[in-house]
Length: 252
Length: 310
Image (cartoon, rainbow over all chains, first blue to last red; front, top):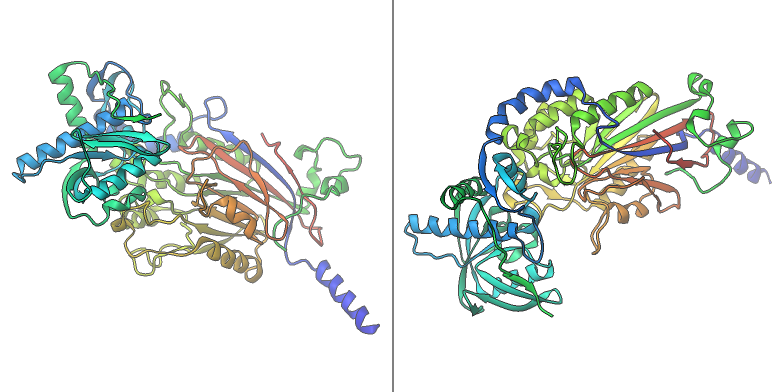
């Protein structure tokens, strides 16, 4: 009885000497940051302004003019096609310049790596920075046909991404039809794939690129090549008009 | 002792406000705060700001004129005026996303965040984009610590520069903070994270929260998480972590760029509520959570979570 009494006292004591402050009420609010509810803070602005001014001139340079907005989409899109084509072309030029006797077969651009669409009309350097903020560089990897098929499976599973040099029919999130230069892929042959260093290092779960047969790091920044290529296209052909060609399509 | 209780209708308000009335903060008698019997701690948080110091341009298709850390700075000032007991936190991916990062690395955003008085941040996957040298540079320039509990940097240049936990006091409330980062393998180039060892987030969380609550006697335990809110497949996320914790009161999340209308209230392993919140990305949203502590309380009080702040 005495022991029980002591126990009760101990319990009461424990409760009465709470070691912690206790929360009595919680109020919450998630607020969108908009013109109406927030002014630009003058102190923060005074820190940012000199930095902004210093890059403004670079960012406002006109790269070219587009006929239509180049919007990112699946299974393929004007934007994913354009960027992939530029990568394949650039890598081909690189190999020719270096006398490497390599003709890259395919380009792969991870969908998530393109961070914005391009508007219709004037495209500035700033727009290209929004599209490709990363410092990624072009990398060539030589992989087996079997690995190319794994890549295509991954692309199909994601509903399509950026490709050049291949044609892919997706059926139920799997590869239905796959051709490179009009031919089906030979699992034991090898292919040169152009991509970026992030992907070549196994980023985005693209493990088929991690241990390639051969690898060439071009050290060419993708953002730089996009700016240069689009500018060349614009100066050579005028307004940039990208046509869709259904290189990735859904099969019934 | 973890968490706080909200299921019971014997609410604190009914005990303190005679006659009841609308459940708004304004009706709590000011004297209770003045006398120190009640303490109000406001947690304001951001995530995935991706160097969006400026608002989006006025002609931007999705977010015309919206967002921007320079705007959040004024919201923080306003909030601090209303309650000086403000804890300002960030859940990672400050880096990468605007030319400010390409030209000035993470240094500019960290400079502005420091000036704004951020108390702590954590390390997101994009913090590794230019390698660990840039993380070190940011830490050296920051007026606030980066907390990461499950990246083991022992064999890297970040050894000794990243805290695994932070304890601070605001208005007499002892707050413990730990940080959880996402698996880097497959997400970040191997060269960029080098010999960083990835520790299991759940195991780490349970160790950290217990240490902060039971050893360090923190009144409030906050997890800064860059794990992501939730996934379709079986991958650890804030939503799968929260129900397995015992002493964490709030998970301030990031990575999945999730806009939540209001914080989610989940039940922890003991059946007590735990809040999970995330504030979109690109400085387009801020989360605000106000905890009111009752010094007179000798035991756990039931809690009302009310989404009524302006």
